[in-house]
Image 1 (cartoon, rainbow, N blue to C red):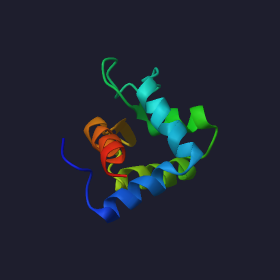
Image 2: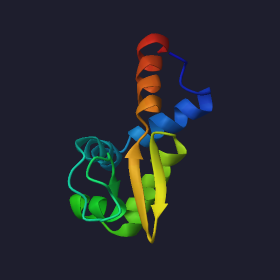
Image 3: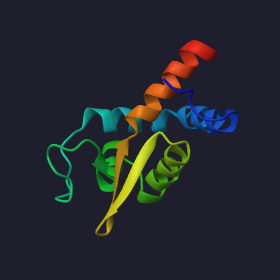
Length: 105
């Protein structure tokens, strides 16, 4: 498997993972709970931003802040559907990062 990004990209990823709420977000995205949003098909992984707000008990701006960090690091993918933002884990990137940590660090 290919090494995870440049040194700068790895630093962004580790910074993104250094926050407890962001780790909780990744766990929520992996759990693939029921979405309140009809724009999310039942067989899809990921959640709408409003689902994350409810699960974390935080405001939309806080969710947006954390999701920006995770997306910049390449660990989460985002897609706008209608007026909602939909997020899912970037599993290939997470696997590459884990392998890079195991082999290189």
